[in-house]
Length: 427
Image (cartoon, rainbow, N blue to C red):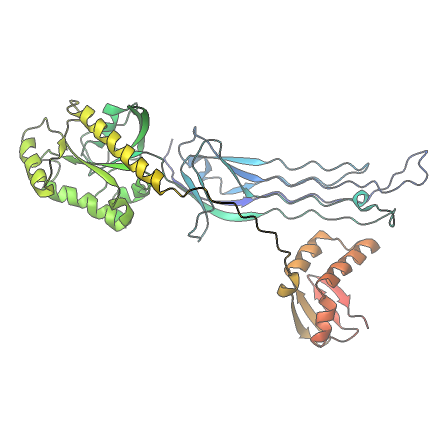
């Protein structure tokens, strides 16, 4: 399967079905009565974390995800069938953004975690809903609400406890294959690993996920080579293993090899360079390895742990150092975690829809009305019955459309244009 860690989607939830006007026409019920049912709700679009999905490849060519609309209401007060909810399985570690936004909408981190990203429109009421003691035969009914829609970008950042970083041929794939159940492709050429490889490792009481991050090179932070595509996968790691080859044929200078990776982390995101990092020298079974190890020790002013991922030399020492470092990081994070605070319940404030009312004179005796409130009710209330026209006028009165227009200079007989509908100003 092709590795895809970023994709764009247009999402559209289903529209609500329309309510209908219907009348009971049966023997033994001479007075009949309203019998029109409500429309069904439109289908939602829900993101769900799925540990069986490891890439966004299944969404790459989908582009548009559209949930079904709700069905219109039926006679006999039957509610229309609701649109089916669309579930999008998302790999763990996916961050979801609105296109061109910097703040994420949601991060999917656990299997089964759900987030309703687009709500389906509510179905409109049929005339049976509006029956009352003062209106026993209403012709009132509603259209369904429009379902939500949005353009989003999904970015996958692998969830791993320990990230193994280093130049190509440092031995990262060999190491993760040695310590875990992962089976990466291993060969003696650069960029053998083309995708991050994950493996689980049991260390003491912990089962940690290790990630082999594909080869970083000089300039990776600016898009050179393959590393730029995978630097973001390091962000979730608690501990980094910086693997450096002691083989003189893998690089010209071991100090430059060390500094190259450090510089790339710093340029991409300074926070990465501050992560808890274990520096490990690999391939200590090769000739001249001792010389390079001494050079590295002298430069870092510390004794660097040397291993052989192929032979298994000092692997247990490395895993023990990983365990101690990981536990220290987790302890520090737990201490920094905010303590539970009292929950403050804020009373929902009634929105003042008069504030967004915009009235402009566009011609002699003609005025344009714009309002979020009226835009909604224009779609909601079909002006095909006397009752509905009365109700629509009540909505206009709610935000004082006619009163405000008169204050701005509208005269009796002038025309008010409200989203395609025309109304005449009263005296």
